Image (cartoon, rainbow, N blue to C red; front, top):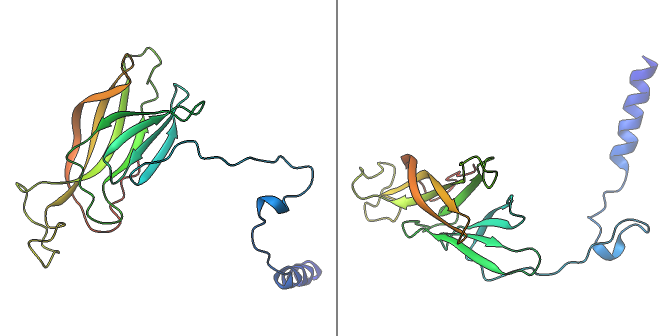
Length: 178
């Protein structure tokens, strides 16, 4: 009983403690590691997924631009590995989204693969019945996952293989995280 009463008092006191906004870098506690902020690279069209590659570069998807781009963290130089022309991004949560690097990428296993998820238009598939306007850009919006092969010699991705296609897309919350 005493423990329960002490716990209740502790929680009540903790709840009354003032809540502080997150400190700015200038207000960091003395003795902690200080960080310098700098722009490494810019000019991306809706950067979405960012991950470290086994080559030491940052790999990212450009949601609106439909590109998978690699960024050298040493100097900020950019290399477009692929521009996927069929990517469609008419809304705010669609386009080229998810990116996953195969664990065998650049490990000499022959699995130099990169996986991507994106929305695209397919007029050969039936229109979505939830879209009231048949001319809406979402009436034929679908999501797919592809496997791309990485060519280390020129730093490009190619040879897309559709793993899953025709998943219904929407104007919101298309998921796409890999």
